Length: 489
Image (tube, rainbow, N blue to C red):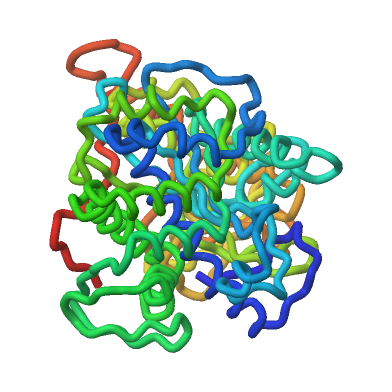
């Protein structure tokens, strides 16, 4: 997926400036967030150094409704390239960013779900380019929410509150606590920890990220670690595969910080704690002692990683500009979250909402004109789907053909979200995108998606075998837990 400047940003950077900026920033946010997670969910040494640790933390009024005091905890960890107010010119020179003023776009966002019994932890990654509804600002990339909230006098608290509200609306989870990490923290933490070992199945040599490692085990210093977790060129899914690199690195980092070499070394332990506490801000209700005690028995093997469900990474047109986005599958979100929580998800009482249109009002079927084009490898499907949609009450255009494509896509004119939402309910799993079309246009792909009656699908669904008759068991969310010594691509 091509990284592009979010629509809300007005500063124009050259491609080379963007490459330099991303090389310095992306991975650092992720890595220090990993260390923060480890500190937050591990008991003994945080308790031991509690006063030293908390004295360096900045507290802000980050939650829209205050702390919820749930037994289960959902902690939102975010990372951006803001500079701590007390960062010296020498420290910024270490980052190689003394000429870059930084920014507040939250390019790393992770919900850490911690169950009440402390038996495990699940990190839920939210891609920065997720196309979402930001209350009061309309559709934009998720990483724009903090910036919008912090503008016009909102400050860090305003940014945190708007980001939390946006993510709560997107996932249905209640965020109990907020932790934000600065760019400078990564360098300090990795320097305090020392080299980190990783293992690759195959050698890599990517000049874009300056990563050059052999197959097998390598010991990475801070600069090499930065290159390792920022690589996206040469990976099948680009930025999404980079998340896999980051999740793996977090697991390795967790094992190292929990090793005897760190925990039993007072000087190293103090350096790590100082590096982290001076680089984060949290909501005022986050009690490190209580949380650490709850999770005192958590091991790195019980930390799982996953990503919210998505349906594609299309390029859409916004204000005349092409923008690469991550399209969230909000229809699958309730089941995904229920699986993470170990609960059930309610049976549908209405057609599921497609991902891009959560805030749009569904237009009546009779007001919507839809044209079907055949981009599949089957004959006659555009005409048959047109007839089917006409039977459901849609106004229909003349069916036609277009170039073959894999994914069934629903295109719609900007501002016609309600019409697109009405059509999308009849094509479950189809991608959605804004395009230069006069009416809603369905392009059938080789994935075999056809027009179906969503109400009939809900009626015909089998009832659950046991439990609440209004609920269906949630399928297991795909998660990964990296074993000691594991190697990746």
